[in-house]
Each structure stands twice: as structure tokens, then as C-alpha cells.
Amino acid sequence: MAKTKSKWICKECGYESAGYLGKCPSCSAWGSFVEETTFVGNDKNSAANEFLNLEKPQLLKNITIDETFRIPSGISEFDRVLGGGFTQGSLILLAGDPGIGKSTLTLQTCGELSKFGKKILYVSAEESSNQVKSRADRLKINTENIYIYPQTNLENIKVQIEELNPDFIIVDSIQAIYSNSVESTAGSVSQIRECCNTLMHIAKSRCITTIVIGHVTKEGNIAGPKVLEHIVDTVIYFEGDKYKSYRLLRPIKNRFGNTSEIGIFEMISDGLKCITNPNEMFLAERSKVSTPGSAIVATNEGTRPLIVEIQALVGTTPYATPRRVTNGVDTSRLLQILAVLEKRVGLNLSKQDVYVNVTGGMNIDEPGADLAVAIAVATGARDVVVDDNTVIIGEIGLTGEIHPVDNLEKRIYEAATIGFKKAIIPYANEVPNIEKEIQIIRVKRLIDAISACVSSK
Image (cartoon, rainbow, N blue to C red; front, side):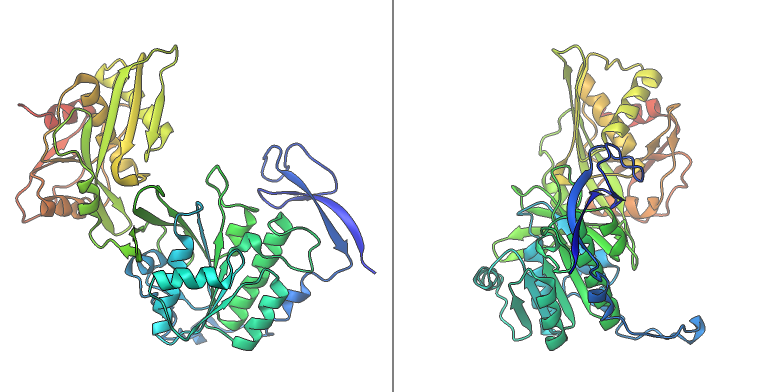
């Protein structure tokens, strides 16, 4: 008879300890240990190992890639993020805030895949069959290839996988699944790790593409141990303001594609709609009247340039310490830009609150947006207007110099196509050969860029 044993597990990295520790010796996280009770003597790996096939090593030159190695999802923006479609036998983790549309996206994907004759097992661990059917009716999905299975027990799910032998498996969500081989509640570190490991072995041994939906914590991280992100092949965040209609699909890890691509959707009554021309969407959010503190940047996300507006509000603070609030821009990056503005331009912001926002709910991580952020703050502080037809690109160094950026020609071409007449670019970048009429202004320092883009009206 198996005996019970208590152990402490770090919920950040999965490190195990016989007793409670204030600080994890593996990942240095504080207060991350949780107590779990397990059975001693159970073969936890037997459930996963029964799906493994003993194979001999193969020479790399003798391995041939199947023509059906990539399976299109039928949703263009999803395929862009995946790198061209689903990879057979891959394990994908889709995470996002509650109500953002994760289940809608996966069910729509199931509907598209079923049109190609793919058999899909949709494991609903949080909703009944009627609830899933109601969502499918709203999305106008009604095919014979989608099997709905409301179940939370992993052993029962494995039995159905044996019987159906599906091409795709959807698990909604991984935090609600539990295994009998682990003596702890669903959603614990041990349960999530064991269930995900078993699903990974099933996906690899049977060549079944598997999508698991994950919850996120209030800090925005995936709930469960960090090792969960290392087990899966692809980690994708579905983000956006649930009170707005736009959604962004952003890969954090992708063994089969680029992690800098993003997919853009609009949530409508019939589900998620792909946004094939996102620049129109972002510029539609732009103010119709020119105002101080607004600058347009041509950022780069993967292979696609995006034209977005950055807004800044600068005002006298009533507090001893001024506030620095950002939405869509890294706060530490803003602090560095403000320091350069004070030291190299002479703009005193020590007693000013600074608010920076990227319209449309977009998050900009690349340093090529530094110059636009700086100009938005500078014009907002001095109540001057940037020329409406100007797009700004450049990275700011600590000495105030403007560093070059990548993929400049694509950015300028996209801006010229939309109708911009002037582009402020780093002097170190070569002038792109663009047939469309757009004035190129090359600048070496931040102060030169501010002078060049301010309207002369």
C-alpha cells in the first residue's frame, strides 16, 4: 500500500524541498513554496511511458520531412504566429486573461480544421457540452469531426484518445485537469507538471497536435510552474483589453517559427475576425485634430511593419515624487529616455508627471520607438505640435545620439503607402530606395530630431 509523503514545491520553477524555504535556492523567488502531499511508491511515469514507442536512433541525413509537416489552421493571423501553420505532434500552450477569447479562438480553429477532414477531440474541463455547443452555434460551427468531451480526469481522457485517435487535441484548461497518479488537487504545481508531461508524450509518440489553454496570474504570468513553459513547443499569449474589440496573439516561445510575429484580431458577434491591414486599425484610433504630445512611429513586428501613434501627457505634479505611468511602453525604457531628455536636451522633468500611451492597445518592445516616445514627451511638455505627415524612427543612446534600426526600408515604404510625407530616420541608416514620394530627414542627435519634426506653423 502506498504511503503519503509531504513535500514543498516552488511554484515558480518546480524545485522540491523536504521543508518550507523562504527563498528558492533554484530561482531565488521569495515565498513561492507550497505544500503538497503525494503517494510514495506510485510509478508516476508509467502513465506517460505507456505511450512511448521504442525507436532506434536515425542518421540526420536519412530523415525525410513529410510534406504534411505543416498543417494550416485556416486562420491567417494564427498561421502567421505559428510560423506557417501547426507542426504535427507539437504541444502548444495558449494563455491569456479570463474572457479575452481563448476558447473562442480555439473553437474557431477547430471549425476550420474540421473542414479539411481533421478529427478533433475538444476536452472541456471547465464548461459543459451545452455551453460549448452554444458557443459553437454562435460561431456557426457545425461539423461531424469535432468531439466534445467534458472531463477533468487525465486517465479518462487518455482512454478517449486511444479510442478516437484524433488528429488534434484541445485541452481547456490545463489547470483544471488532474491525474490519479498525483495526490494533490487540480491546479497544483505537481498536477500541472504531470498532466502536461503526459500530454507531451502523447503528442510526440502519436504525432497528435495538442493545444492546451492556460490561466494567467494577476501579474500576467502563466499560472503554474515555470517548467511548464519549457515542456511545451510553443507559448502564445492572447492579450488585449477585454473592454475593447481588438486582440493580439503574441508568441513568447516557438520552436518552429519566429517569436517576433504577432497576430491581430477583432472580436465581433460572430467570433474573431483577422485584421489583414492593422495599420488602418491603429491609425483609426488616432486623434483627428493635431495635438501636442502625439508622435507616429513605424515599428517592426516580425516581418510586418506597423504604424502606431504614441501619446504623451506632461503636467506639474502635486506630489513630492513625480509619476511615470506607461501603457504599451516599458517603464524602465521611458525613465532612460526622460534622463536623456533632461541631460542632453535640457528639458527639466523633475517636477513633472509623465504619462505615455500607445493607442490601439499595442505593446511596443523594440528600441526603434525611442525617438517617437522622446518627441511625444518633448512636444507635450512644450505644447507644440508635430507635423501630421511625419513618421519617426530611431533608437536613442545615453549620449543623445540616434542609433540605426533594422528593416528600415519596409517601415518607410509602409508609411509612404499610407500617405506620410516625411520620415525622421537615424543618420547611420542608409537612405532607402523608395519610389513613392516621401521626404527623408536623417538625424544624428536627439535635439536635431526634435527640431526637424516640429511643425513650423
